[in-house]
Image (cartoon, rainbow, N blue to C red):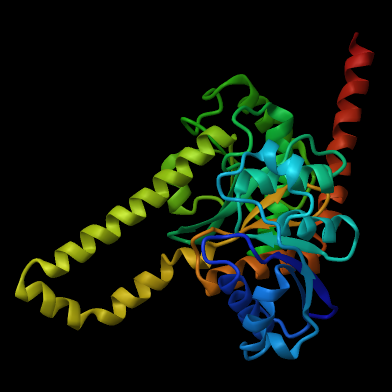
Length: 352
């Protein structure tokens, strides 16, 4: 990293916190030596774990003390009322107060979204936040949004998601000009509801560093037809859960097949390296780190049941977004969208 990036961690959030968070932080600072971390949680629990790490204890990592935490079963409304002094709330405030460039938590998703939205506010020009994450594909990796934050979306929401998604793909996946597609029930222009078709018409006219592909279908997600898949949170969440379930089913069938006979067990021994490569390719830790795009600050949600490597990857996503100026790029490209809208409005006035 060319300049220091500071990431605040909700050290008490997640199934295996705080050990998971500290060990993930230890891996992250090995990968990114200039990274500064702020661990928010119970000092009595954190200090002994930090002292036992190889690298984190040698850095300028700071601990912000609190004994309060958001519970996994807390409703967002409960977290908003009572969680301001929790590890999650104080970690988010590190970003809101300009003391950190981003926040990462493996805690309660609904609480993190609600508290981040309240503390960080929305990015100017964005109406709703969207949850974005990665998918493995036949061509590499792609990102998809929204994955559950917004059940219904209008055309403007989808266009804003497309802009945020292509910037996210450029920064995190390193793509120069990402291809973007709108998830639909068919690829033909007349398919889908009116909001989808209207969003497509706007995206075709935008002069931003993306290539709008058009409509894509469900099987295009894993095919890697486009780099960014845009949809509403209803369809996106179903696609995400279907993909996760399919992956687990495939892994189960594969294990059962190799156990079935002596010959298949011998076959397993002969192809262990190929299976290890497949396991690495589909390892969910590689894709850990769902991002709340649209907030006026960087907030990353780690899977609550991940391990230290997965949590370190989530920290890396937040650090990359901060390092490469994600928020500034969003604001810059939204100005292009607003200019197009102003021209359209002027045309409507002239016609009327």
